[in-house]
Structures are given as C-alpha cells and as structure tokens.
Image (cartoon, rainbow, N blue to C red; front, side, top):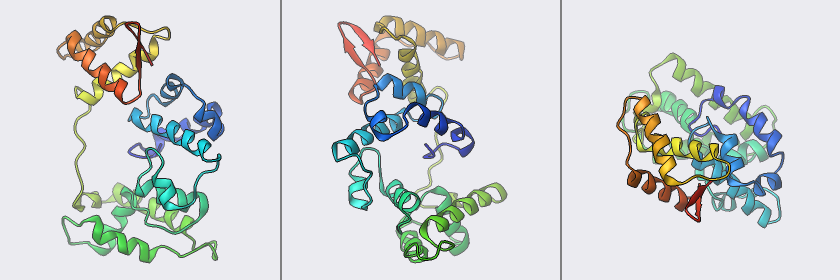
Length: 245
C-alpha cells in the first residue's frame, strides 16, 4: 500500500483492508470487484490486483509467504525493493531495500554534491550498511530500515528532495485529464454497477464526468478501447454485451 502512496493516506485503510481480508486465503478467494472496491482512493488499482494474485500464488504454494528473495520476486507485483522490504520487516533478514526514502538518505549523506547518481552506485553501499542479522535487537535489518525510512521522510520535509539527484528520478506526470485518470474513473463506474453495464452507458457517464471537469467528452470507441485494455489486465470482463468488474 505504501508504494507511491503517502503514509497518511494508508493509515486507517490498511486496518480496514485487514478487517475485510484478514488472511492470505481470504484475499486469494476474493472477487475482483471486492478487492478493487476496498482499494479505491489508494491509487494505482493494478497494485490491488497484484496483491490478490500474489495471495493466490502463495496459497497455491502452501499458504506461507516465502522468505527467499528469488521466491518473493517470482510473485505478481513484487519487485526487488518490495522483496527486500518483506525480508527486512517480516523476517528481519538483510537485503538491499532501496525505496525512495532510503535512496534520499544515501544521496544526502554519501553523494551530497553529485547529480545523476545511479542506483548501481547506491546498491552496494546499502548492502554494506545493512546489519547482517538479528543478533542485536537495536541494530538489526528491521530496525535499521525503520530508521532510514524515518530519516528519509525527515529530509524530504526539511530540504529539497535529495531523490531529485537520482539518475532515475522522474517527475510524476499530471493525473487529471490523463489516460490513467480515465482508466481509474472507468473502474469506479464499473464498480458502481453491481449487475453490469453496457459500454454505451459507461461512455455517457464518463463523458459527463469529463465535461463536468471542463474536458471534452469521449466517444464510444475511445471508451471501448479503454475497457478492452482494462479487460486484458484483469480489471473487468464482458459477458453478453455487458461489462462487469
């Protein structure tokens, strides 16, 4: 949930999520519409489906979350940083957990006057600095990364964001009016029609939202193209001319 979403937005939502999906099996068995409905307001709906699909893969593998890095990155939606984060926070195991706040700390402390610093330069340093194990509760991987996350957040509040000096830093594009915004709006509209809805109705409803925001309405063909795109990614499906989430 914390991938590209602020802590203040996640707080309260993860508790509600666990109330609805209290364990891996409950999430694995959940319908797409239920998962997306609970995720609304968290951004990037794809993460919700990846989380559900990862839960299914875990259940298929015996029901226990993997500990090994290679097994974690084989799960849907889990990349190198997330795998290292799971190892550190769930199992107190060492690894290169290089997310935005951790990156900010290393850029600020070790590359104070450099621009365009690549992760390949930072990753070996993150590994060298990470405690090797959990022998000392005050200096273990979990505690170390908790501290880095807090320090990185502090730096971003008090200084120009050090992460902007990263070689891979990309300023996020505007959401309003973007293709991503239209996809998200269509997902919400699909969820509002529990019994399904035809593409023409969706086109009219989405166009009304666009016009209300001062943008041009969308044609039926444009909406149909987005629906097909969402269907390919598992967000919805068509049955007898009716679209369902």
